[in-house]
Length: 303
Image 1 (spheres, one colour):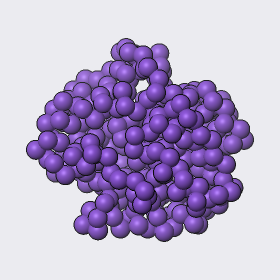
Image 2 (spheres, rainbow, N blue to C red):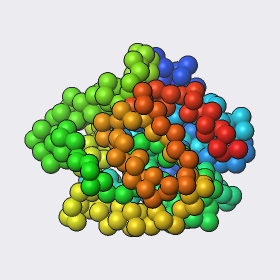
Image 3 (cartoon, rainbow, N blue to C red):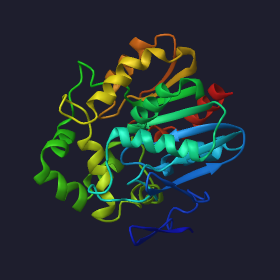
Image 4 (cartoon, one colour):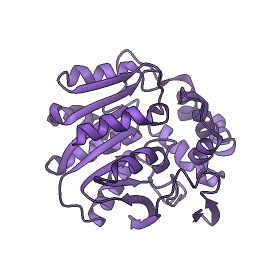
């Protein structure tokens, strides 16, 4: 069991330590302490999570790939076992996330080409970084995420709209009741998650203060030009064409209540030559629903 201190509160891996046995590592990134996993040797594979997950979500891939690759899985600031600063001292925006990721990569002194595995908000963060560093990117595995604005055929789900725009509801619901992280345990997976997995997924979000990122990620979703991350998403949206379609693989759970088939179809329209694997009985937490098949596909693709 590993015990960490988050914002002065003890948080441990008790109850899921067998699922997440990785040595904790930390780096000071842009004024905050970022936690990350760094396992194995070989060509680097960087895993970028979304909201409300953390590096725990990639545990099957870390274990399965680290025998042949150097697997790196950071926790964004405000997530997992990284620092959770208040919104007064940390800018919870896409630009800041990309800057943090770049700072970690430079801190780790990764000079060879790396592959990325991205999910949810990690897709936009990872793709934004990749487009700025095309010469340093090998392959990208894209799972249930976006690299563009909402497709024309898709509307922002009502629950996310309420969290983004209705602060009197969102603040007590997300920060107080933890409905975002806890709700995802039932809405994001088609598999009945074990108690240890549930505990692992929500463990870092154990207090009002420690749930700040789960709220800020939703509030940062760019819908109009007034949103702070709109310009960065537009840059990614317009820049995706620079990616090599032969270096992309899409893995998708179609029962995702947010990043559903509309998002995959948009990606396929842009990259018709890229390989795509669709799981009709999997949801947003694809690596919880299909850990074995996904690991095999990723191993073959990266090799």
